[in-house]
Image 1: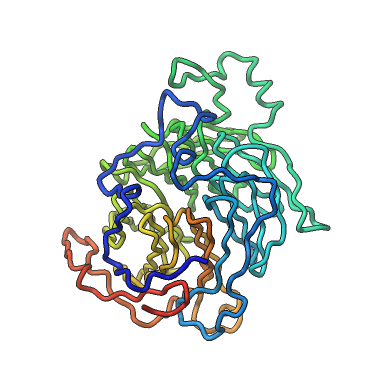
Image 2: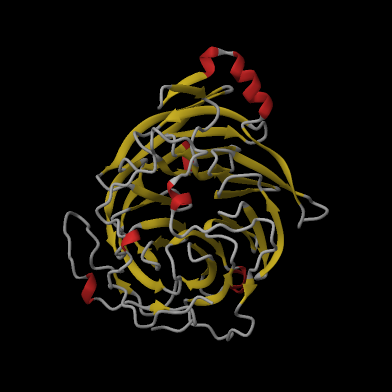
Length: 444
């Protein structure tokens, strides 16, 4: 079981040099490496060889967990021995988990509901779109799965992106080849390196895939076709987020956050570069946008969060949130909250109140870097009309998933005093008390 760390201060610098990347400009992109070679995550000391054929050893450790939880507290812990958690997706109380074991596990009511296995490739991203599940892999492929309506615990492989027939047709025309590093060419409709992120524009039926090959690609889901490939950055694209009004955001190891605008002309789809929001030395590791598209967040390898506010279709820099001591690895936005997971093993819950962001609480308990987050609205709180609550899933390289209950109206709300806003900065974070919740559900 993952134990709490009640004696660890929220401002303590971690001793784990493997994840001290505050001043790092580490790039995942290597022009002399193909995706089928050992990529950085595969060479991580957190990785160990394990069999994908053995039954998962996930188990619920909290069957007897007290029901009277604090406003922000742990609901349960799921621990597995088959691989480190790299991706999560949740919808209608069903949780999908992806790891380096090549298995995708499905969970319902804190118990294993189903599982399906990919042929190859660490599962780096998962998207749920109706009865289809899209998974992005280390080998550069997007795999498609379909949930059987008569038997929802049965997931059948429905193909991959791009389709084999499309690859064959495209290979005939020399104009479909683009030059990549290592003095070689490849078809523009396929990624030539690991997929880092997936995002979905559900209204338009468009899937976006970002890759370490410096591009993001646009797929028409109902036709399983690649509509466009955009050479977006000078280094690995670590995150892509589709927002409202055809706006797409990308973040890269080159230290930039870019904005793109989708333009459609009949069957043709083009994404036009709009502006660069951020240009820094540290790698951009994660992006998140709230549902209305009014606030954009980016996390970096220096542990900071930048945010921009969109008003009248214009984006202005709102400030910098400073709370983590190591790299921010994942972000998720829900309601007025934004969640940041870090290599410092903590999850910070931020609340936006007008132009001000506050630290709502710090969720502790993971024994490894927090690699991925997923958030769902707590249906129980929405049906009763009580204070709004969210169910937060956090996946870590400690091979565990933790499930948290987070309220937007929690007490002990502390203003984030190190926010850099309107050109002013106050470095007094260390003197501000914060509410921490450990893996036993208690405040520490």
